[in-house]
Amino acid sequence: MTGKAKPKKHTAKEIAAKVDAATTSRGGGKAGLHDRLGGEKGGHAKYECPHCKTTAPDIKTMEIHHEAKHPKIPYEESKIINKHATVQADPNKPRPGIRGSLKK
Ligand SMILES: [Zn+2]
Image (cartoon, rainbow, N blue to C red; front, side, top):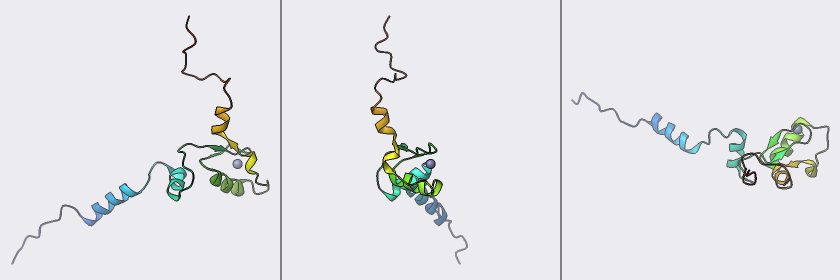
């Protein structure tokens, strides 16, 4: 009769938690979800809704947003604000943190 059963160090529950932590993207919210679904990756909100200024990481998300929030307004991809393009097309705007040319 062997009275003592040694407890396993790694229970199924612990392993499941580790697997979950390793395979689940946390902290990304909707952006993380779309990362896993594939498509254009950026990490930053690239597109901005011209109607309510909501941002989305890709055009597909913006289209879904538009249909959900502005169903009465026809969806026009050309009206979606591409923030990345906007930033590059605005060279006159002073950039905070860069002081190279301001020597006394
Ligand atoms: Zn909107």
